Image (cartoon, rainbow, N blue to C red; front, top):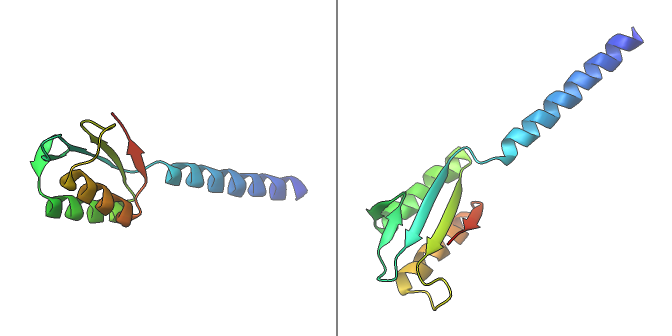
Length: 99
């Protein structure tokens, strides 16, 4: 009886652990890039700020994440880049900054 209880506890513990590990990884990632001229690219396609907002809401529902980059990352951001970054931060989604 005790072996069965220990086995059951191990299964429950292992199952919970695997579930938590799986939850840590985003289910979907969208890549948002802002060019130096202010053009917004969403997964490689031109997009408006409204389309970015819609995508962020979709990602939040799915448990997704965002990879964000902008040209001239060491310089001052354009108004468009700042607006996009502000929307990403307001969404509460995990974000990875990339070059």
